[in-house]
Image (cartoon, rainbow, N blue to C red):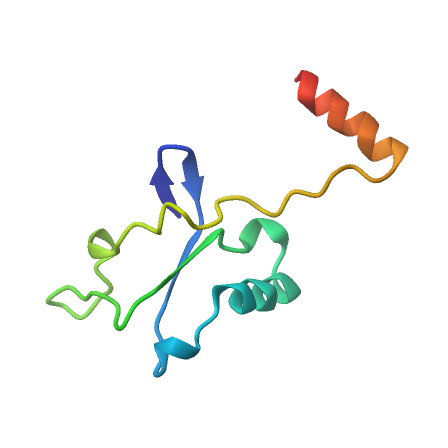
Length: 94
């Protein structure tokens, strides 16, 4: 979890042997198939290697902030049914 100006969000820091072959969209799709929506990271940061402390643990303070242009929320889908429209209007009022 990472705190930014909009609150907390999940960020995945990813390393691979061939970083050029990593696709954030494919990773997100893979995660959505296996995890509940609230556990799917909203941003993916590809690194050559994770920063380590002198003790060999991941140095969380040295992890870079995710790209500000990356997606921060799930893809918007407009309400499809009358019930969804009613709920959307209730949430809008709240």
